[in-house]
Image 1: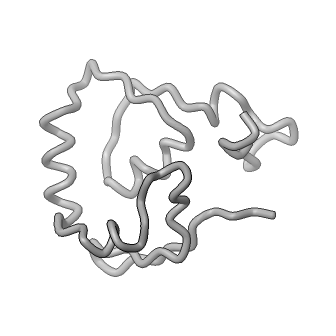
Image 2: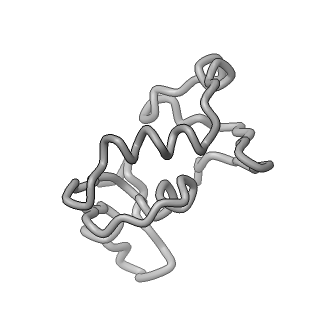
Length: 96
């Protein structure tokens, strides 16, 4: 079955029922202890990421949307390994 996180947001808060801990390292306890608002996280990332930084990940579009960021140097496994059925389908990271 499909086991993507179920999240809904209110302002800068997201309430998740699945943290995908095996891959993310995030647990309910670590999530509950998070204290930085989204704006502060974006400022921290701005200090680390320049226009020349290459960001590598899976389904980066989702992360960038959540962070309200636009970045043009991305290596995304969703793009590198498209689903045989085409868009909008995507391969799960666990099958790559």
